[in-house]
Amino acid sequence: MINITGENIVLVGALLLFVAVVAGKVAYRFGAPALLLFLGVGMLFGWDFISYRSVEMTQFVGMLALCVVLFTGGMDTKFSEIRPIIAPGVVLATLGVLLTALVMASFVWLVAPWIGIEIPFALALLLAATMSSTDSASVFSILRSKKQGLRQNLRPLLELESGSNDPMAYMLTVLLVGVLSQGRGEAGLGMSVVFFLVQMVLGAGAGYLIGRLAVWTINRINLANHSLYPVLLLAFILFSFAFTELIRGNGYLAVYLSGLVVGNYKLRQKRALTVFFDGFTWLMQIVMFLTLGLFVNSNELLRPEVLMLGGAVGAFLILVARPLTVMLCLAPFRRFTTKARLYVSWVGLRGAVPILFACSALLAGIEHADLLFNVVFLTTIISLVVQGTTVSGMANLLGLAYEEREAAFDVSMHEQMKSALTEVEVNAGMLVGGHTLRDIVLPENTLVMMICRDGEYFVPQGKTELREGDKLLVITDRSDELATTYRDMGIDDVVKLG
Image 1 (cartoon, one colour):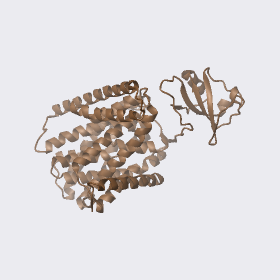
Image 2 (cartoon, rainbow, N blue to C red; image 1 turned 90 degrees about the vertical axis):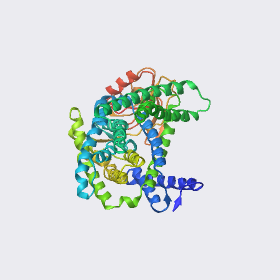
Image 3 (cartoon, helix red, strand yellow; image 1 turned 135 degrees about the horizontal axis):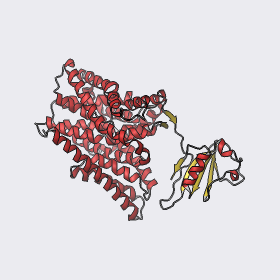
Image 4 (cartoon, rainbow, N blue to C red; image 1 turned 60 degrees about the horizontal axis):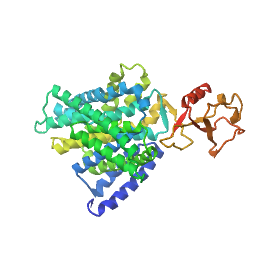
């Protein structure tokens, strides 16, 4: 058994990262969630090789990683995509969390005595509250790693829900931990509602203002060393969380909204920042799931009461609680079909967040905290195995999936340039007037810069003959006119670059 202290931590850390990356490649090949394999690697090493049981460090690592994951998720989300689904997304992130917690708590309270465990309703509610939110790390990584589109705006809906529902679950967890630990925090329902509203308002306000401050600073600071821009943005991420928590707001909501603001404004070095944080987010996710895997005692997961209660909770959450909650929350929104509602019900992935929230009970020394933590951990594994491996399959089964075309051109524009880059695929409608490039009528100040044909790239001339399936890289100063031209040609699949 290795104690990860001193000089061993570097060696062990390097080995864990290497094995996790290899496991991620294996997971992608077989269609399993990479995060599940990261968790498994941590559990494997923690079983016999590494001794690690620090609750404080586990929660600290999880907090840092979750901040980066939420910020990057917000940064990669286009506001134009989530605008049509803000209302159902917010309902799922607030009322949905509360309903899930109540339904799950009732089930746990009724079932636990049959397993030989006496659990008071408050503890059952705490167990349910920790699992009441979907996990942003799991949802973001799984949905975005699949080269698959989802109809009816389902992907932005699921990402908005997972990115914004942690604050509600966090508030419920904090309140219940206070109630169960020596009676602290016994506030009435009215004070609890006020506490929640204050957290949400302060979190949203701080997140928006810090996001705008980050955009203003990055665009005006003019650093000679461009490599420092990611460092500067990372400082804003951590400040957004810490400052908001200091003023009694919800730090996780602030971080997500800061990322949403930063991602939807023009930003200096935006491409470099996106590339950096894409890799850095994966690193933080790997570290977080490895740490959680190392922390859990695998022998405790195999105890009969944990297996029975965890299995029952996992099955009930997937098959009853989540579908019931989604159907109730989406009932007022008629735009979603029954198949869409079923898919949203299915992609209720649990991951690192419930486990991190369960650590709060361990830190507070609540009775049965070990049982609670192990049940939450087992439920997370069940969710990742059952739901995580079937995200694509369920979308195909319900007829909600379509193949998402990858861009043939990987280019970006300088932030000061007003021109727009788009990529389109030549179709029959484009060739009605002729098969050469000069026969295609485009708006003024519009140019076809490059053509990709069967994986080969070349610069075209006016006499270049076009073929269906060719991919064109087009630059223009007349974006609106070009969009109209595309519609007239029957081109719906336009990839915006830069």
